[in-house]
Length: 101
Image (cartoon, rainbow, N blue to C red; front, side):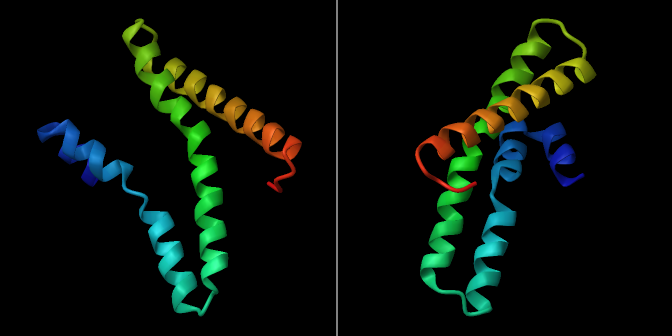
């Protein structure tokens, strides 16, 4: 709700707020507060970093589809499907290199 209101006034500020990794930051702070070792927090941070990559597909595909004249719901569904496929591909690649996902 806050982001949609911001977008009415300034889309770049709304995008910045939406892009903030608040969930990740909260998780890092929570783990630290619970006494987790730095290595555990670092591992989580690295894993999140890898998993951000396929999510970027959505932010590329959605505006492309919308600008090509496709409807919102179709574009959102297609971009979401492309993102899910991106996650699947990433997991395959990570397993090939011995990473656990």
